[in-house]
Image (tube, rainbow, N blue to C red; front, side, top):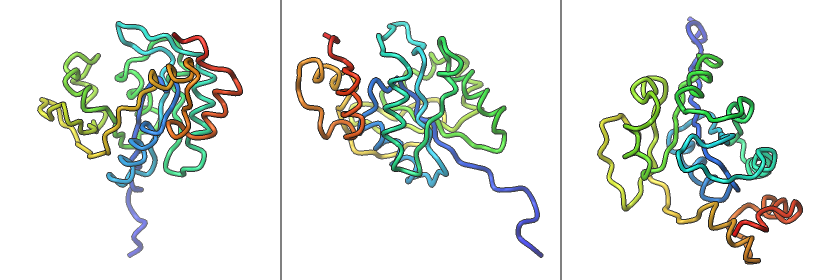
Length: 200
């Protein structure tokens, strides 16, 4: 009997959300390592339009953050970009975003990637009890943070890095090199568009 009879295989897709202001090598390493470790079909980097945090972060125009992401992932077939939150504009909560994605792609199982430092905040997330029914949470292990949580988390080991977007912005503002901190095409874009020159 032919094997194709029955339901098609479900897609396994990772989501790494963030401001990506700018995207850097650690973002890309995390997305790639999780995708490879869990055997995912794709990992989408999902830029936020406005982060839903109380401490609102100043950010550059979404078009620049999106352009840098496109440059950063173009040579890795495992990685792609999800623009739902940019299209929606305003603040987006993870629950609303993932509900919309599940409705749009009912045949997909989603793996939502968060840093180990974020796990302890999960009880405060908007509609967390419903969110854990929608997605599989993937936690990136961090040395200084425990793995105890009331929620189901798939833990993945990824090399630790202190690299941050704020550090990169400060370096650009100070006239320091950001070679090897971001992909070369992202560095060229930042220079060409003269981004982050007045951050401090």
